[in-house]
Length: 395
Image (cartoon, rainbow, N blue to C red; front, side, top):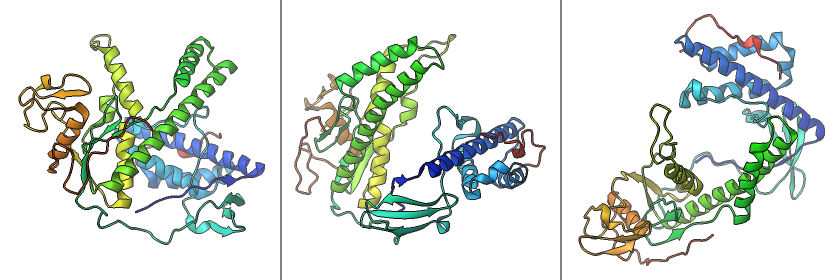
């Protein structure tokens, strides 16, 4: 498996200034190359990395300021753009705005980077055109192992189904409930007041910038808590289970707006908006990503099943009836009378859909019983270029 470790560099003021300049140059290259690709697509042609890299070399001979940044980080910018356009489509890739994008870049040439230890807790790395930069040696660099995948999970006979919810984030077929509040009541109140203040501010004003910065600080804390919760939950679940079964949900499609158009207005827009917020707040997709990532370390297999009728099916008699789900939390089968938590019943149906049996009490034949947790702490085409790379605007 490929893993990464992050270290915070202690840049000097000169190095920080150079780094910001490198980032701005990369931003200009990204935006110009993206516009070039879009112009090609408007003509029904396609532009890729190879010809753009060749034109970048020509542009550097004409514009000396392009030579300030190391060549390989500019080429890496074009590679990242190529990957983004192939994955999402040329017209869906975003511009890098000077106002809303933090300058960043990557050094892909590892052979040009040397690292040395200069103390018990300090190290030093030599970066192209930046020189030597110190950093805190918080943990070993590693790097000897290139690929590794656990062949067997430590608990081979274990499996769990997960039903992602809007009230409880992660109910499982074992009867566990994993949840956490990401924003305190005080933060929610302050966030609403800041939104009201933002509406009254003038675009481009200092007050607007300060208000946006205050909103971003609150949302950054919320995002960090959500990421921590999803990573912690994913790690705990994969450590205990050799198989994790999820519903194959398209979260992006499920959280789309229902407002429609003027000609065809949507229905129950307010209710759908509330559901969208709940789905995004619980981090459904981030949890899925966390499980997939954590599974690489434990040997866990992540399985996705069809989500149809999992919340309406009785886990005992298998009868499907929408009337069985009495409320968000209560399931009572209209056929056999079986009663259970609605989310746990759905999680057990999800586990059964993958071919793993679960008993009514939640045991999986591995000596485990229900451990319930209260809610608490995812070929270039030769045509005339409309916007050549040699016309890159200087940042």
